[in-house]
Amino acid sequence: MPNTATLKSHKPQIPTPATAVGPAYSTTCSYAMRSDRGRVRHVNQDACAALPEYGAFVVCDGVGGAAAGEVASQFASKAFLSSLKQAPAATEPPSAETAAGSPQEVRLRQSVAAANQAVFERAQKLRMLRGMATTLVGALWESGPRTLWIAHVGDSRAYLLRRGALQLLTQDHSLVEEQLRAGLITTAQAEASPIRNVITRAIGSEAEVEADIAAHAAQPGDLFLLASDGLTRELPDAEIARLLTRTAGPDLEPACQALIDAANAHGGRDNITVLLIACP
Image 1 (cartoon, rainbow, N blue to C red):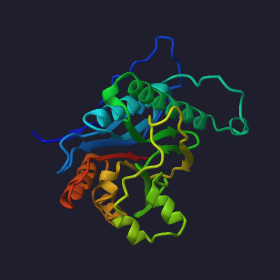
Image 2: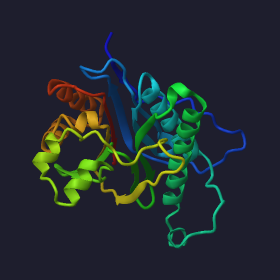
Image 3: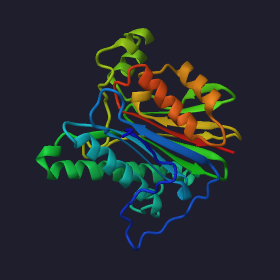
Image 4: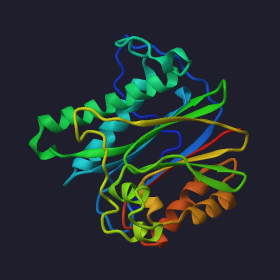
């Protein structure tokens, strides 16, 4: 049986309190997502999910022994989307940023915190899950003004393809990235580093976690990519841009499959997950 899952219209079964209410962010973005085990790993510890009626999308890459990574990514993705369905919690006084008009940042921070709590608490309850964690890169579409908000923890990434040019929107939370920023190694050395997989921030590894959150103004024809490092470690950005430019159309599934096929052709040494969001 193929080990690739097509999840374009799947809606995750998320526990939602009966009293939970929240604005349904209308979105006319089209999207598609695929997750593949790769050619080496025996288990797929990645997860991807979406609530298109809320304009919410997420990719997680779990870490941990046995099935722990898979548990972490599933718990985080479900908790993240479940939180975005609910009204923002009024537990803190408005900050200067909130007063300036960035409620989406508040919602995303609360949702990342909910994901972190879900994974951390689960790991504390079961000894076999101790130490599990996951990366997370999530997106929230705001139709007016046309903006895609990105939240991320770890080394899963978000990109923007605009008029054939690919731009990295996130900065990895990893030891290699810290070495690069400090000028201790070159880009070529970073790509060959034996510690590329060591991340400095993760969902569920501690009781609290800080996410990087940013807003990106969208233009008609923009294509956003959320991906686990199983894609970005196998393919250079130039190859990702070339494949997306060649294969992305009204139906985004062929583009998802093209990226996964290319990553597998280059070795497929890790799970590969891609989620594409096209803005009209």
